[in-house]
Length: 138
Image (cartoon, rainbow, N blue to C red; front, top):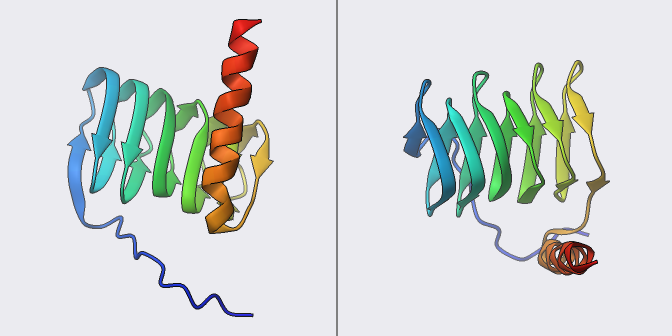
């Protein structure tokens, strides 16, 4: 059955913020538009649109966005509300959650993959945060 709900259109080509090669950021990044990362980021990255990790990008961060495309290296959890793509040469060490996942041949992925319908992603993300918080208290 087709989903009659209107879904948001994401555009990885309309880049609003660029973290260039040779740039290092420690802290949280939040943007309503697309973020392209070619440098190094430690912290958390959140976008209302798309996060694109280029080949040279290295992150020790949790990612949250509508769409996430990874060609670089990510150490952290990844939550895409609509779509996650890990391109050839990409590396993800951490758990991934998305309704649609595409993993190319030759990718290094170590973690757990959870796929749920778009409406269920928020509930799953909240459950994971609560589980992580209770684990940190022990």
